[in-house]
Image (tube, rainbow, N blue to C red; front, side, top):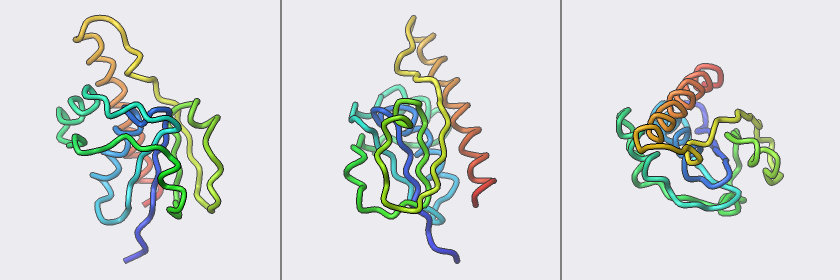
Length: 140
């Protein structure tokens, strides 16, 4: 069994996009990886993110919103930024981590009726899920 990989998913507030990807990667990789998510700021876990993941059978309700500095000592194999802001202000990790970037739309900025907002969350969830599946296929 190869060494367990450490993966950090980073976004601005660690409330939506990074939490979605964290959930999918943790589910797909199980014991093969330790998945962390963090933000360059801390905005709290978005309840709509929890809801759309539950709809797809992934429970992220116990996740917390963490600041990237909390993981400064973790030797990451991968650092994945999921928004341009985090990519631009991403702290330098003193590691050989492979850095990957994909800018997903921020569902927390969605406006309209609750139904319209949830539709945006579901759309982003599907984009994140596809990215997670591709990452797992390519890297594991």
